[in-house]
Length: 589
Ligand code: AGP
Image 1 (tube, rainbow, N blue to C red):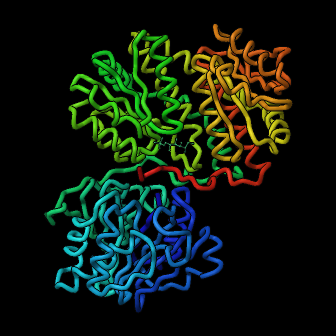
Image 2: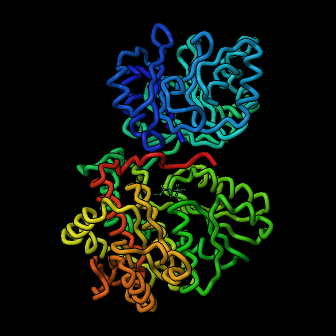
């Protein structure tokens, strides 16, 4: 889940590569490296965050108007200087940066070693460089060598290659990992994500799998795996580069939590025709499978409750990584509803491939226009939440919930009613993000910062809120947190409760209230400390955060948990935007 960038133009490459790679740091931040072609091909790389490595190595010392760069999320080979990208060939003529995993790298490596190639790293990536070198040595041209090399690779990969003997062009290859071109004037870009070059151009070309792009400063050409030219459309991205900045907030996480005052409204303000089209596909389907990972999976789980109560429809919910085990249920009348903020999550793309083989129709909810999932789907709805930079999904989750509610109401023939109710919810976000609540949540974070375990209980729809809340706490504060359905407590987890164990009870004013409060009482009688996130206070609560009462309570109930996770991270000195061991879009299985 690395970030890769290539630049070619009239300007010095390094300042542009540095700024663009920083914008991709959410994809992985174990090591960083850069390579440019000035008088010669020169590489600087090292383990660590971009700023630290740059202070150590000074990337600006690299000359040339053509270059590539990389920020790493390690999969093959430890987090070391020599495993950092770019990787070069035996004669330091070719350099490559890569995102993904080469599954057959050890066979290729063995074969290339027998042919005399010397490897300097433990990575899978380095085989790409030596493979291209080998093919060039056999008389192939640079582009053909890259195409042929990509045919011999197995796995998920996107890579960018440059060649000291062919200064003036960049060759890039896409196969099941994101890669997009940025078309400028007298300069061009190639990168894992548009966010990296949005401040230079919003004219983009989305590459499809098994496509190879040859980029010069004034032009680009795309070829398929047979080396045949492919005509590509230039799209315009309607995101401003400003949206990809912190706008005065200390971290993207708290900025994106606050953006929910607008994003929920933006999620539901859309052409009624597209909502009705998807609602009809859902109503006509014979068997519906909601499939996703992580936070998006929690939105799918919420959908099961939402569609059951509003449309009286049964929907199946599966973790994408487990979905292929259930593919034998699929028919051409089945509908797969996938949700993914990035639209690049490998497990989701794999589940879609399995379903498409069975003729299943695919609907997707994505936040990134032109993402792989969007282009693989029969129909796709954009969340319109704007770029989500923080690794933790926050605004994308509440936008997913809002759109699922709108679709359920549309399926039930009550579109206008649903839209009005959601508008009210959007307006009430500011009544959650009040100074009083934020002060209470910051204080709670101070109280909980040294805890090892935090439990969350809820019933019905709030069960998925507990799972999402627990995920937020774990991801960014590194405190073990567990969300569970209140009814499950007595079947085991209650054994973990002792004096002072913090337990957050999600208590909306609805039919589940009495039962959740009973569960909270069971915990309290074992010494547990009860924190209520509720529509009204209760004597059972030792601490409470009171939020406005709405029918679509999961959209508001999750926000105090997002804030608690954020302030716990700040209290514990963790980086809210780039938690350890994680990355924004998980492009490997
Ligand atoms: C959530 O905070 C995490 N970043 C992660 O669980 C994420 O939701 C998951 O990787 C799915 O990502 P997607 O929505 O982009 O597919």
